[in-house]
Length: 300
Image (cartoon, rainbow, N blue to C red; front, top):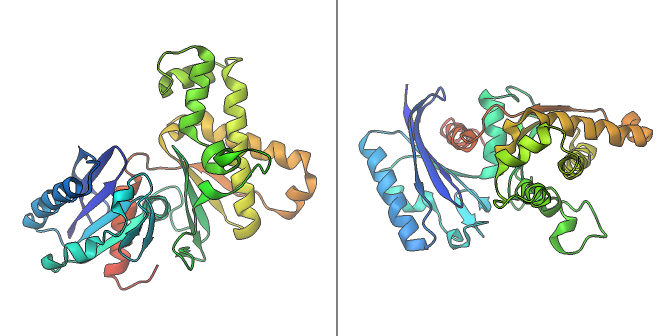
């Protein structure tokens, strides 16, 4: 077995783990994400140096933003990452280095060892601040000409809404919907997901309309993708996917849309809409699998 370092760069924390090529986590940790470029890179250098000394055979990164090969563009929630190339930065170690967008990492994780295992046409949707996505078509990760395929947050689902609220990233933001539920409940901490889902799971009359509308928006995203890509299955991830009611209600919302529009149901075959197997560790697995594909000489 060979061991590898996998790093998941998030807006709040950087998670990292040593895994072997069977996808078994040997050790795992995290550090707070520095919000200034030089401090951030200095901390990354320390992490990489530590694991290189332990003999890892490659380094896998997952990051927000548009990623062309190993170059990060824009950086999403971490704009200072724009222009960072980890393969170039760590070339001195003579190890393979791979970098992938976080949404694409999630679908690779599920396709490798999760609920989308071995499926040739599938997608992962991550519900969080926005709507992350990764799509596999005919067994290949869909990157797009400009490396931005799967950016589901920018799918317009309401042309009458103002600003970003008409796009999936605004209208189907799990973070914003949790805040809306807690605000309706009069909670002081509007970010408390457990409190919001306690009300939702109990069928609270104030919470359910907000939650159902959210699930309808996610179902709309799935139908839109389905009309273009015709996939077998979608894995729903993100923190809120730990609540079984999320996938249940998305399936219900999908069926309701189809029932009101029979032509859609006759034209588009409903895909499986499943729980993602991996929750907070998805990007670590997906980043590693991306590296392994590169090590094996396969193109993505």
